[in-house]
Structures are given as structure tokens and as C-alpha cells.
Length: 128
Image 1 (cartoon, rainbow, N blue to C red):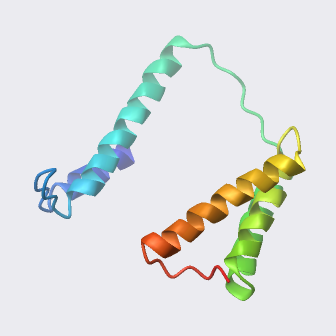
Image 2: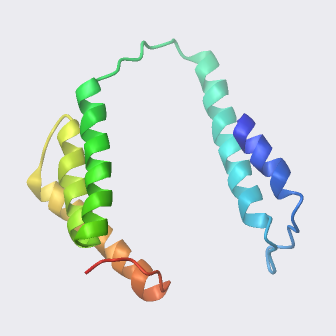
Image 3: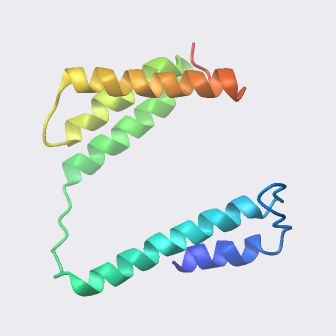
């Protein structure tokens, strides 16, 4: 919540504009407001629920980090399609259940989003 307040305060130094003609400060201000509301909701909710001990699984953290590093390396040296597929199949190994069909569907969805970003927004993604 403190970070959201900091960024929201800095965003007000830029022109916010209106919703019909937004200024450079509107988007960061709106994001910081949403993050603050989410943080406030979590803080209020935490007051009414019993505390639950937090446990760390080092193996799962290592799997997620490996999948992110693998995605970055594969995307940089081969192509992003293979990087996305590696990311999905590797990161789901940290979960409680592993389904190849679910991984294929998630990969297809992420690839569709990547192609949409490349085609419609003109982003220069190294997809192939």
C-alpha cells in the first residue's frame, strides 16, 4: 500500500487529463489506486481471519525460477514460441497435479496472446 501511495503521489505531478483525453499521469495513477484498494482489502480481511502459518517449498521456488530463466534464455537465443512452451511445461511441475493436455491449452492461449500483441499492437516479439 505504501508503494501504491508513493507511485500515486508521483503520478499526480503529471497531467492527469480526463478519461476522454487522458494525460501521462492517468494510467499510473489508476494502477496505483487499484493496487492500494487491493492492499486495503487484504489488510482489512486479514484482521478478521485466523492467521495461517506460511510454509516455503524450496523445490517449487527453484522450479519456477528455472522456468523463468529458461524462458528468457530460450526466447533470446532460439525463439519466443519455444520459450513460452518451456515456461508452461516447466512451471506446472511445481503444482500439485500435472496435465499435458492442460499445458498444451495454456501454451496455445499464451501463444495466441503473443501473436495478437505482435500483430495488433505492433510489438517486436521474437516469436519465430
